[in-house]
Image 1 (tube, one colour):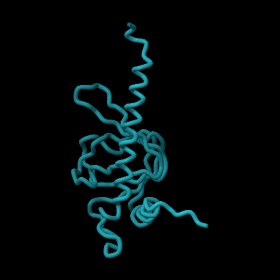
Image 2 (cartoon, rainbow, N blue to C red):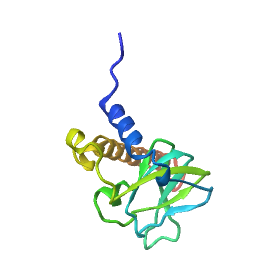
Image 3 (cartoon, helix red, strand yellow):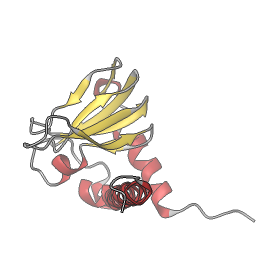
Image 4 (cartoon, rainbow, N blue to C red):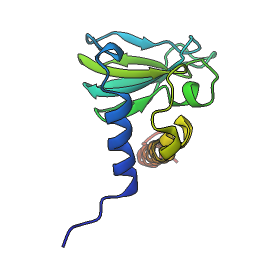
Length: 157
């Protein structure tokens, strides 16, 4: 008896195969490269093929940026600026290791639109999954901060 493949995995495999295998839309970056700059222009959705990246968010009133995510191969970034069409990066993204990336941009046309729908419809399972992952990461970070505060020895009462 075969095990059913989750719909998200089928959709992801198809989307990656169709949209992220064009050699003209792939490139490598060395460790330390700033791929996106917070508040900078971005009209691309990136797919991390290999390597590790970290996203940082800078607050106006803080000197240091806060780490908001770390992604491994098989993940997307630039999701907000691409799908919301803000064309503005919400984080600074840095390659923590040498990375291979693939991308599509806002000019990329939907493939097999009559069968699979618009590009947004084709990516909907991935978008929802990314939102869920981000919510989960935020929740884990909040729980870790709460544990750290509870375990803190300062101030003592």
